[in-house]
Length: 210
Image (cartoon, rainbow, N blue to C red):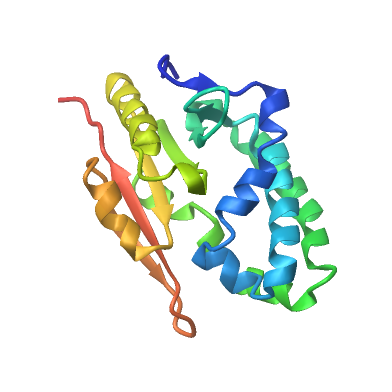
């Protein structure tokens, strides 16, 4: 990826952002559902994101608005992914994440039950070429509403258009749909669960050759 106007995090910086990820996704509907105990949730999310970074680093690029890392964007690049090595690495990551449930065994059953909400398997039905997946995007709470995340998102979309690659993403917050749709994302699918009011909104920008 080019994205020359963004700051690319180095491995040492990437290893440090798990605490920021835990803090900024603490109120996310999915994590709040799986880890309803507010006291334990932060601890669980720090473990979760630390293992996520370890597992996904070979396939993702980590960008920030600057070296201060006020706004961070994690982008999965399908061109980096070989199916066998990816599946083996994901299996190892999931195995290590079992430590999440030592203090809250019931969370394991919730995680299994809501597993589709953690994955991007829906993309298989819509993507048939190389693509970028916007895996995570956040701005630290005291710096929101300044357009930092929007600038990063625009850079990603422009790069994808240049490379004629699709861009996919999902959100669990219905209020986020209008924000992403203004950049050209289209709602492709909604994954629902019958027993809880939790949905995964699956979004995509197609960049087909004209």
